[in-house]
Amino acid sequence: MVASAVVATRPEVDRAKFFQALAIHKQKRYGQARELLEQAMLSDQPFPERGHVPHFLGWCCYYTGDVEGAKHYFGIHASHWPNFDDTHYGLGVIALDEDRVADAEESFTTALRLQQMVPGDKRSQAKTIARLGDIAMRLDQLEVATSRYESAVEMWPDHYEAWARLVRLYHRAGREQDAARATESEQRARVRMGRAEEGEGAETGDKAQAGQTVGAPGVVPDAPELTTPTTPTTPTTPTTPTTPTTPTTPTTPPTPESDDPNHE
Image 1 (cartoon, rainbow, N blue to C red):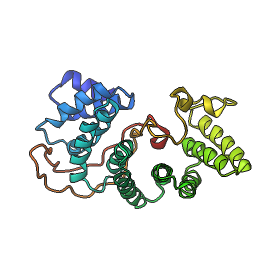
Image 2: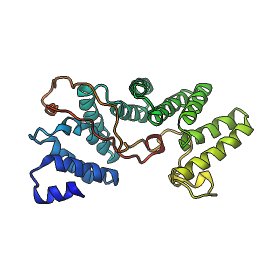
Image 3: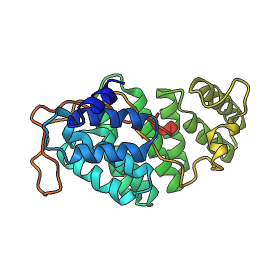
Image 4: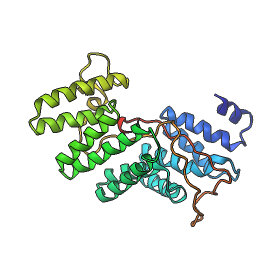
């Protein structure tokens, strides 16, 4: 790995630490990634991606159980880069976990609006629409939830968790033929996404391993994937001493890798 080699030979290069942290994040070693990102956060070197370090720290904190830290870092990043959809998505995930449904809906709606500005970014939109479906489920708005999940799988047919939620909703509505078709679609999506072997039952995937019920609160939230999101607008001026220095030549960073189908 180039970043690791640079860090080994020139440990003072904080930009290399940042990219090394992203590679470690992709391997889901969030604690180690967080240590490197915190070093990059404290850097006085003006590397272009420095202003986005709080975004990745937010996800590392979330996955290591530090929800308050995640909210803190996502908040910092959102204040500087208000058009960065994945940060609003992260704030929505946390709000939904905490049963702050109105806040979650606001964050996911903002994320969706930003995603819709990127032509062809159907996958990100589908994941966010599915999260809005989760909100409707939480509010017992079953028809709204069904419509949102249907929109999500139409947009991104590999969203197997959205298919699984549709199976449950179709059964509740007495739509058994639709439930059977959705079950088949869920299984095919799991196979395509590498979450199940050909012929393996849908319930034997990661949902069943975690002992979770489809659509239930507490589903493992979404981690970021290493793709390039929309280019954010120019950051606003920091207002607090905890805010990192704004990079002089900002670039769009990759988005972290996903543990969860809603964000992979």
